[in-house]
Image 1: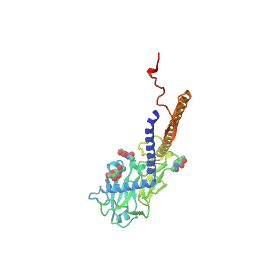
Image 2: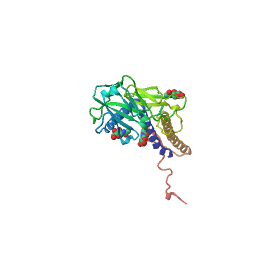
Image 3: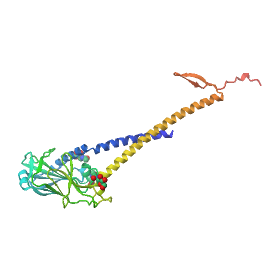
Image 4: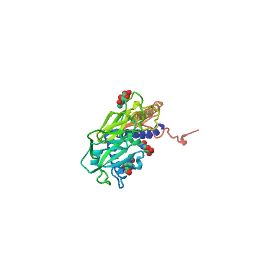
Amino acid sequence: MEVFSHIPPIAISFTLLVLLLAWDCKAQSPSSNITLARQLDSLLQNYAYGAFDHPRTGTPYDGVAPSNLTGIKVAVLRLRCGSLRTRGFRHYKEFDIPTGVIVQPYVKRLAFVYQNLGNWSSFYYPLQGYTYLAPVLGLLAYSAVNISAIGLSELDILASSSPISIKFADVRPALSGFTVKCVKFDLNGTRELTDLNSGNVCTTFRQGHFSIVVNSSGIAPAPAPNPIPSPGKGHKFKAWKIVVSAVGGFVGLLLLILLVACLASYRKKKKLMEMQKREEVGEVLQMGQVGNTRVPVAPMTRTQPVIENDYVP
Ligand SMILES: *[C@@H]1O[C@H](CO)[C@@H](O)[C@H](O)[C@H]1NC(C)=O
Ligand SMILES: *[C@@H]1O[C@H](CO)[C@@H](O)[C@H](O)[C@H]1NC(C)=O
Ligand SMILES: *[C@@H]1O[C@H](CO)[C@@H](O)[C@H](O)[C@H]1NC(C)=O
């Protein structure tokens, strides 16, 4: 029957949809995102330290990000903690580090790893309802006692007098009437929205990841010259589509099962009706034993054979 040939594709697509839905939910949970972002921090620390080759203290070096993360930029800067505290460091990429930065636990030298997540910003730091107007930038402090160390954990730093400032260079414009905000993620993934200072400057007293965002409704629909994929609206739409098609697929499957059941019972009824009809016509049906039920059984032979000898012309 034609209907049966449609079952496997529907069943398969339904299963795929359920799997997709489950995967999508997992990808959106905040805990898994910060885990991913922390794995990236660790990976980028290793790659940034790879740029150290007879490093001079106080000179920034650009590192090379892994080839599967094209679009991400890293750099590293080694400083004496004493000098950091008394002199700070001006213009380390977008970051301006003031005097008075305290480092804990005490190390003689530290390294600041700089990250520019570029088009990976919303992948590692998805922000529902908001669109990034600039890439996510990271500033993380590690011990530089051993410059070939990998898998280091961050030191704790605190700007004790004035904050560290971040001056964003290429900021996409937002629609007028929408307030542009600074967003800050600490190492636990906790996010904070703060006011943007004039000149596209955000400030922080601690290390972490930083960017500029606007409510997703405040972004022009036309593609911007330097688009950053937004997780906000697009993601919501995708989730909706998946939900609708999953529900649709499920209902479709139910209807199909009902249809098959109906067809089967119709065939059974039709058979019975045919038997009854034959009975009415006068065909004698013998009752036979099949299992535990008595059912009508057609006789082996419908017409008695005529013996030729009996025929007398
Ligand atoms: C990129 O490659 C590194 C190994 O070089 C791996 O640890 C990391 O998970 C990869 N990242 C992605 C996003 O594929
Ligand atoms: C970012 O852009 C690079 C090419 O410039 C591409 O290979 C990569 O897949 C992009 N990343 C994302 C998350 O779209
Ligand atoms: C964005 O703006 C719209 C309308 O202006 C509002 O309904 C929505 O709640 C805002 N979203 C966020 C995340 O603030």
